[in-house]
Image 1 (cartoon, rainbow, N blue to C red):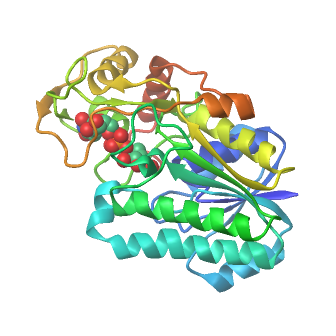
Image 2 (spheres, rainbow, N blue to C red):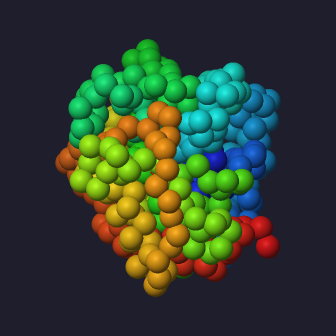
Amino acid sequence: MTILVTGGTGYIGSHTVLALLEAGKDVVVLDNLSNSSEESLRRVEELTGKKVAFHAVDLTDAEGLDALFAAHDFSSVIHFAGLKAVGESSAIPLEYYYRNVAGTINLLRAMDAHDVRSIVFSSSATVYGEHNPVPYIEKMEIGASNPYGRTKEQIEDILSDLAASDERWSVALLRYFNPVGAHPSGRIGEDPQGIPNNLVPFIAQVAVGRREKLMVFGGDYETPDGTCLRDYIHVVDLAEGHLAALNHIEPRAGVFRWNLGSGRGSSVLEVLRSFERAVGHELPYEIVARRQGDLPAFWADASSALADLGWSTTKSLDEMCEDHWRWQKNNPNGYTA
Ligand code: WQD
């Protein structure tokens, strides 16, 4: 039986494809390559010695999806494909709703038509919004505060309603916190197009000389060092979390929600210092104005994933930065030669 991974050429997708192959699963990848490179799959094949079938299909292409499902005997789907920049989503919300929500509806319709009703969905901590106390717990009322987060929330609702209407569905909603790091080989990693929105890929580009200095967005928050706290998680731990969730839902119907995080917060300056240890010298930075929409501090209550899946993070912040740096140092321009 084969697993379809949508968005499988991306950062988290490619690491998850590698984990699935290493677990002996057969994998097919669907991606429109709008924000990733097929080279990541070539590297995954090199690392595992296994082949991965790739199809450049867009989720808005219902006919292409139907043909793909007709050509394969999928047992389940891990669904990453979608747009994911918070700031951008406020500028082009319709594109986000079209690609993320309408695209997922197309995917679910193709799954149902071909009797594939097991899905692991890439959700996000951003669905918890600004009103919830920290640490975030899965049973909390969600309410995202930006269009990107609302697409994730709406897809969670669609999947919940679908499972409630038809008990043949098995659904895992995985709420990621802040994925960073790279496979320890340094052969696959995060390759953001344009100026990185996120902290660690930006620091990595400063370290490799592509950016002048890190701008720290705010040093006057009510936190120990004045900078924001986040729950950083190694992308390899995150990939293993997907495998654990998939194994858990395959024999079980219904909807399951899990935070995938470490359960502790690290500050921007702590992350910078950790990356400096990986690089072996200080990196230039400047504390500037706060970024619109940033919350001072949030992290996961990760106890449900441990209790239900036996999964927890295993890698430290220093390991995240060491692995991220090895990827960036060996691939200064990402997958672009
Ligand atoms: C982390 C901290 C910034 C860049 C976002 C999305 C979330 C998820 C993960 C998709 C913040 C600070 C950042 C920089 C900085 N993505 N920072 N200088 O905002 O916690 O979460 O990415 O699911 O949905 O919201 O991550 O890495 O952007 O920021 O000081 O150049 O680093 O202010 O405090 P964030 P981030």
